[in-house]
Length: 100
Length: 471
Image (cartoon, rainbow over all chains, first blue to last red; front, side, top):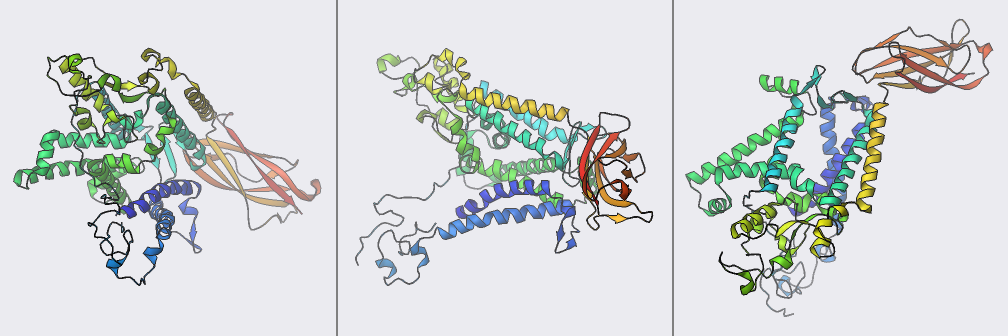
């Protein structure tokens, strides 16, 4: 849940700014999608555009979270049994504060 | 490998380390006083403006309307087009600089009194208080088992919250889509899906932020809360606890002499903490969680009055004054310091530029686009012709009759019927042909200039440059 907020909230701010700047400069009625004129109303394009920008802005945050994972998070094969692993190891069986 | 047994949820050193604090609901105690009255006044003023403005009319249309579908912004007598983006940018810079100036002078005035998050939380808390009672009653109700009375109270509170949120969402959309159309859509129950979506979206955000998230928005989500402290300096007015006067804290009877007891003025009643909407203890000094609402000042003053002590154990003061570096009376004089003067000068300069630019703004715009298909062509009577598309925008609120002229090459002829009529606040695309006798001009490209003049107002004129090609 907290990770979702980490990703979605900054993206919401950036998506809002991008939306404003983009649609100030470009009129949806002048835009073409694969060579075809867009038949949707401006309100529809603004709304859909906002979600596109929001989701695009979320990608970098998702990647940041993804690349932040430690080696222990990524490695699957460990020769030690879960209860034998050292204290603080995220894969230790009785260590559940390591997983957020 | 024999690892020592450790309790679940324990860090290696044996201290329980939660990754983030589990939120406890904060039930701020209601307080009365000078600052509380200011907050109520600000809630009323801002909401009167917010809920009322979309219903005002001006020149037969909505007075303030950011009509996104038509790409036109109406602000009373002003009609802004996407080309006028610079004015909105200037307006945003003015808002930001004002915020910097207010923050440098008196801290988080915006957060404490005018921020929508504070204002709606205040309104939602007021509804909560009317239905569930004050702090103690609300805490008791939350702990109580679910029964008919509790369900009824909770349901009516959420019902009112949702109704207010939907009304807020409706008003918000009314700034972007004509209110008149929205009202007829409600009457006929035929909402456009996009408008309904945004009403629900904004309504849900209001309900979530003011009903559930509350101080968490300020603590974890607000970017301003994170950087406001860079505008602070030792002469900024902030809400402070007078530690030399208050400490050591301790309870006492009303008749007791604090000097013989060896304690300060703070009775440690905790009302400042109970009144705080973000749940902090202001006696620990300035914290980023403090939104500057001054509820603790009012709460503490109530206690000081009861005890017959001087008010202002918690008060607006500056770091320099509290530490005794400067006299309390010189706080006002020290408002004028380099930081505030720089913010003030910048603000004044941008405001002046904004007003000047706005008053000199010509309510007429002209864009020239050359015909992309043909650079030039020869007419049947042997003349060279270039074709252009003129985009004429009348940003004023009256119809105009315009005269078009062209200059740059002697003997250039304009083949467009005159005058050109343009409706108020609308744009017109006019095809224009220019012709010239090839004998009177050298081959190559020549700069030409179109000029558009309002036939009724000679000062309403605009020009646009383009090229004329001759082979």
